[in-house]
Image (cartoon, rainbow, N blue to C red; front, side, top):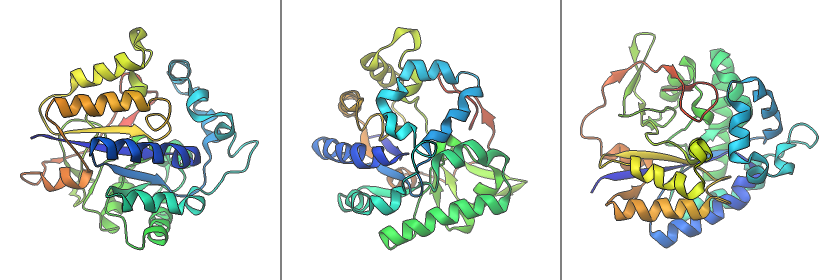
Length: 292
């Protein structure tokens, strides 16, 4: 039975408080496991307005109804409203994910700060951000994280090196096809990359007039009988797109996939993945470039 790993990116306070419990209930109903990656510091979602200068930003905003998914209050955090500390305010919710039998890991310290800046930052800045997230993770869970998934699939060379320094064996910071072992400045890293292989719902909805259900069916049609990784967001699939996410889960089960964690996908690798150099690339339906 092929495996399909479910990677849940939790970006905001609202996504943590509302989306995560909804996802836990649904995953329990269908008897599936997932990897939840948490934003553990301040919620500066309001800062994301600076992305307005990126190609394709406004078209995505119009297609995906950002206001309805995130809410006005969240979109003002860090601007007209103070940025709440997600990790401090939601420890019990985060621990409930682990207690329900799911894998937990690090998404970022400050989601918007990382996503909009990491590409151009130096090693000291990068290590500080990653260390702060890992320290908060230990404070909440009592153990170091085992996996990491970069906000917005944004990385730099220092971040790949830092994954090794932190002792992580696998991460999902990239988009692409097959798992690979990153090569940075001619040196092969130890932390294996498990790329997100499938398009996300927010990249599809509204393209060629596809509605939410058609987008889910499109993802199912693209799911082949190979190992796959799907990224969802607590703010979207955990709230307004929850029915479409259930449509995906049951469709994948009908296709014969075992719905699992990143840890299970990593354990199932038959051989060490081939070395590859990470590259920047574009994806249909997503503004800016991502690490591939």
